[in-house]
Image (tube, rainbow, N blue to C red; front, side):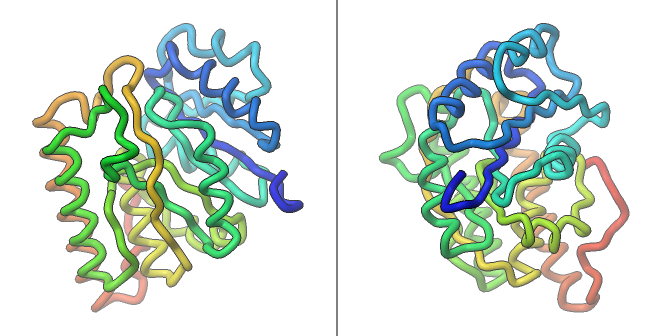
Length: 248
């Protein structure tokens, strides 16, 4: 618990068999996490065997996609504070404390991977990915006239349960766009948000999204389109974020 608030941590997994157990154990060592939920999103064979010896609760989600996994995790989470991490070795469990310290003053705390001093050797955050994420984040910041944003692709976040319940009806994305879509929704719904730097290290294994530059490049353009589209929709439609469910 943290200041009499229970904490849930959601870990979506697809291709993290080699790293997930170690990250769960690091969370357990903190002694403050009440509920660790592994969302098995059609994960690699052997993932369940890695999770089984730990205290984490494994839930299987058949709908493919990062967004589908996170939404299932949000439904399963029981904590007053709900966090999301990826168990692929790129994030540090100790950054839980950093998120918690800001949760006292903010409804949602988003992580950022673009601070040079916290990008570890071997991390997949070269010139292209760093400045691409930074540029798209600044576009979001400018169009929505919101807080300082430096990373649109970081999946680390912490949200208070009552605020999650307020914005969850607008979650419609099953795929990799869920992260930036959640950010846009929270801004549009006037949530009190902040983005803070987190540690970013070398990934165990390869990523299907950022492992190839052309995939990351295409994803960046799609993110730009999403941000611009919702900015214009919000000007002309009061229900701009209640759109047909999609797999993007």
